[in-house]
Length: 66
Length: 499
Image (cartoon, rainbow over all chains, first blue to last red; front, side):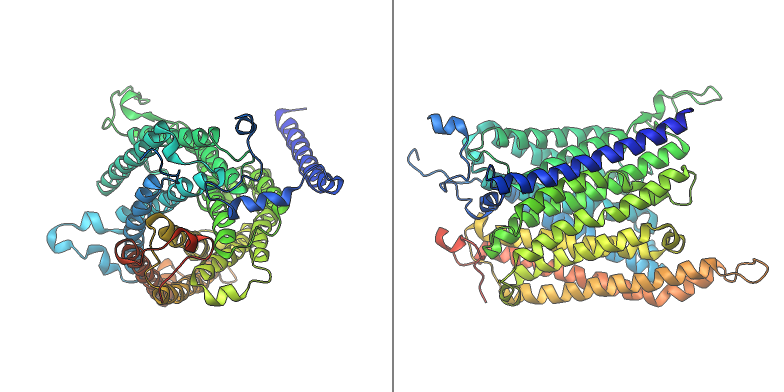
């Protein structure tokens, strides 16, 4: 197998892998919300409640300790 | 002083708002001059009696136009919005860190120095002659310093945030920073000619600031268009998407329609965009599989692009009356629509059989401009309109002026791209036409004659857009100096504007 053939196979393999990763990510987004482990839609409020004294959607932990 | 409540500090954002307006006006003015030169060649020598022909001809002004609208107007807009949006969605003020404040100001002043060096050197005709990467090596090094300073500011602000998660816009700003850093470094790998030795054994060739690319031939073309196309990705798409994901929800008071879709589109865009640059080199000397890859990935690119654009339009669900009542929402909804339009047109042009007609024609120029004028320009102006009342604590000066500007500029964009469609396809067809023996049917000058009316229409379209931009600059200036002072409570969502 010459280098060009090798490049071809490597390229095809990479694309396939990345497609699998992307689709797994979609599955992860929807399934974790369905199971109730994560609520992604609440993050949309970060743009709306963005005054400096508004309560953060998710506080950073070191703030909680204070 | 001690007891003053903590507030966001917009000092650096204001500085970059100023350069956005100034460099936008300069870049677009040069654009209109160039369009007039294409329609009326005499304009090339308009200052001939003063002996200034050298500075007004098309080839000297062209990189000044592209670089001032890309690296002047657009980048300033990206920086201005970052120093505004970044603080707000991370819920941390620049005033909380002296270091970040210092870095922000240093970022601005270094940026202005680089802009000055770029303008002077391009006017003098000093260029590395790579499209959108014309700056010579000393300026390239300075650009890297500016970029790293911005990066330190980004990650510094993220480091002291109160909000644990990064809002989707922040992801897009980070991608802009990393993407451009990678592209700029690799495409500008160059050797100062003074250090090189020619095959004939000469040394110390050329002036100290001249350089040659480290790549040659087809490799240079490949790296150049990997850079060129992705500069569009990470300069004209990614950061502008960052803006619309913040400003449209905030101005309309509606949270983004689907946060999940925004995440998916983000990773989709990152995954696909970097492979599409090969479509600039169709029918050239690069390997055929690479050309096909460029075409295929360009078509796939419709999905993540439309994912973001549709998400924005759906954010307006149930609130479409705002499009009629607010000129600011009009700008953003039309920007999003132009984004959809442009990201459909691009993939069509990247299909090999279409590209056989479109390549090197004015249709490409039309495509670039419906994206930049309709999407980038509209979104940056809308962002500044939204920011102005909040950073100056004043009402927007005139709603009617904003509305008039919207319609004048929309007409300008429509005239621009429709004339370039007709010009481009006419040009492509005339270049290919031949008789039964294979002799070309037209000479080059035949096409020039046929295209003249469309070049004139394009210049008029560009002029209308420029007039609108001056109206925008005036509106912002009047807001800053004489708008009614507003209370914090008036700034929740829709921007206050005087009739």
